[in-house]
Length: 169
Image (cartoon, rainbow, N blue to C red; front, side):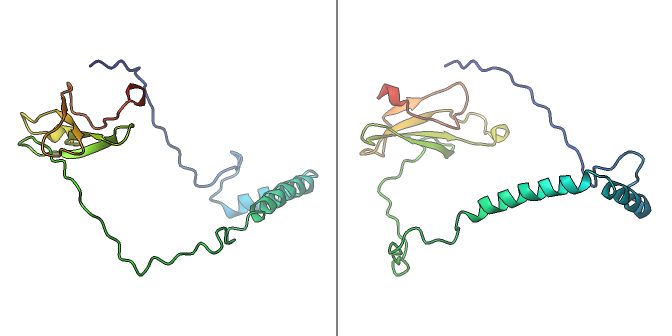
């Protein structure tokens, strides 16, 4: 099996924003500088108009938020009390990894037509810690026969996900 993927390079960047929006000539650590700058901005003739328009925008958003009643009881009469029934589960079949070196089941996929088969990918997710000689096989099981896998899939590297293709069903 060959897979052709495109290489995608990423770059992580970060910035630390402690206090911002101040001009370069204003030191945000100096209270006197910030007070002087605030007074200068408040004297600006556009200041009141900008505050009014921002207030209208905020008012519109608040009204949108209040239009949905998050406490409304959407399903009246559907409050069935299950507290008297203890939760329970029943094991029907166990599909064990047939290899000597046991691995975790990392993916389970049901066959799309009638749930007669299940594909299970087995692997050790810490790829650097895989034991030497560990099998890379994953299996397709018939749900009526959990003792032996119906088909063995042997890839070039361990599978962490295995899915049925609905177009093949």
